[in-house]
Length: 416
Image 1 (tube, helix red, strand yellow):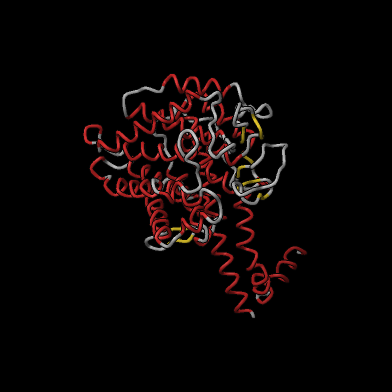
Image 2: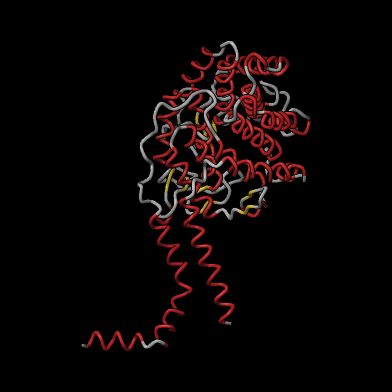
């Protein structure tokens, strides 16, 4: 039993030390780690992971392919133009999977734009990303024409609507989906001759007049006919909205991000940072989007906020969230791949790697925002880990002290 206890003690100590290392490691900047995660996701897609994800939630197939392709775009944009072939190939492969009956299956062709703003917006954003990997004088003409045509369709839909928030499904509208689509129009105007400036200005005016009165943020869900708030702002959508709103209007996007940070970023039990699903002072139940809530925090919102923080230039918060995620996310690596949560939910890995690789495609922040966390935030976690690492050896230390007579020697020394 002593041997078993010793083995357990060694494992606990090693895990504690490893946890402290993860807190200090730059979990959001290692391109090799991003590529290793992408290798795992590619293997998982080949094994039917997208079809499995589709059985769990309506956009499972779509999101797993879309995030895989978007991450490759981010990887490629960091490479010299002549070294983007792999990123371009993989991003195109993912886009092709979205442009199929299976990719469009959950969505309705009767909506405007066709298949709804969720499908149209995310697909157009990825299509623009593929185009951005190509030098302007060597772009694939058919890809440029398709991006221009799809952008025009989205622009017409926004111009004709009496609300800034278009339907993703019949009778259902979420502001986050329209935010992604509007960001794709801004990307169009960077890559191709500009044409959607007035559309974006009208959209922003409509958004500002329909903010959630309880938080001053974009609401989670709205009335599809009027765009009036129907549900309070929530972490799962705000983390995504602030990622893309900065691409549309940097000043408004920064203001919304700072408000989101104030209301949603928390430190459960005074330990690592996390993102609440509901704003401070409000409680609610988790759902398929947020996942189960732990002390009010949503794992999915926390992961996506890493990407929002990176785009906003808030590397302090992005690093803290990613480091804490590496501590509690059970990461496992091989020489070729990396996965979280034992690789049981590949769509979760897709959100993680996309968030860690995220960068602004339309613009860059002029300056970093004020710090969200104190510099000493890891100290309580380090103390907890150190205590756990030392605890298995306290009994052994007492036995050694007793055998050496140190206890009686110290007692005599004190009496003397």
